[in-house]
Image (cartoon, rainbow, N blue to C red):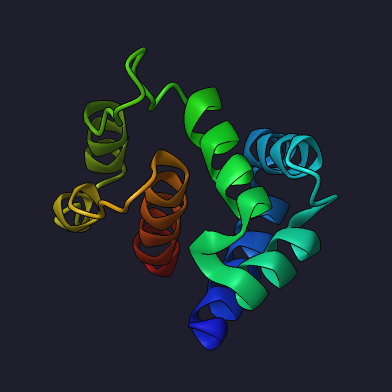
Length: 123
């Protein structure tokens, strides 16, 4: 899991360098969650994975800011799926990420975000 998270964080850093809006979102959420920056997220995720409360808060912030959490707290994958399809990428992974359910909403948000990052950033 640690190697996976390090690779995802590395790919995300490269992607952020190319997308100012995404970079601002990630940096704002990392600061809001008490992680400081992307490096803080990487360290926390490597050490505790989805069990880290700050990783959970970061994930919730990213998902809420992208309007992917409904009023009832459930995730809305339709916008992400539509965005993915517009890019012309293989979006079959969205169904896999949608099935990532955990015992708390925070862990679910963290697991779903990691799943989405893993797949969308490697394409």
